Image (cartoon, rainbow, N blue to C red; front, side):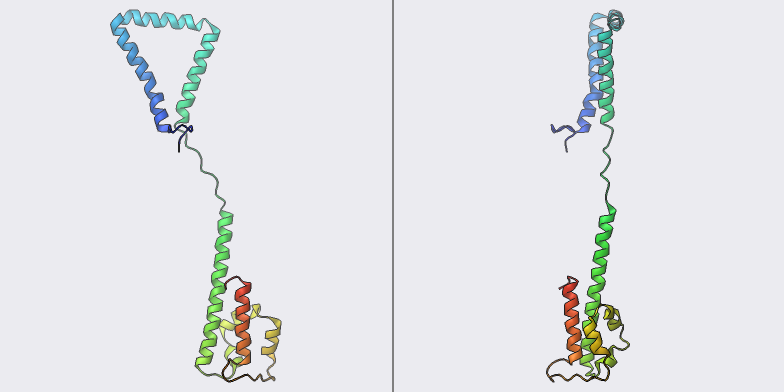
Length: 184
């Protein structure tokens, strides 16, 4: 990026600012050799003393010197980086972590159903009684489903080709949570 919008960087400006006095001194030295060192130095000293006698010229030379030193110092100053708001990143990371945990709970719950059906258990309540997968999801399940599961004296009968009614209800709850949590 250019330093002043003209395609010139700070390094180029610094090179010019540092090189300019050298060029002026070299040119002055060339003319000094040409005219003679004593006359040249004497002429500069005389002109400097005469210039300092004029307040306007003295002020102008002072402003030029200050401007030159400021421009040179500016080339060495690096801009401070913009402050980074880590709170937004931290919140995004926390939300992502929550989503990952929820997704893991959903997968584990589906794996629980698959194990239950693969082992051909007929008692869903017995399967979930000590299951960590079910216990992790339990606080998120609907009151209606929890009431169905806790009604131990009730026997729900379903079609042989489909899931047990309580297992089907559990899968429906998993689908609902997945949509509610924005994971579907």
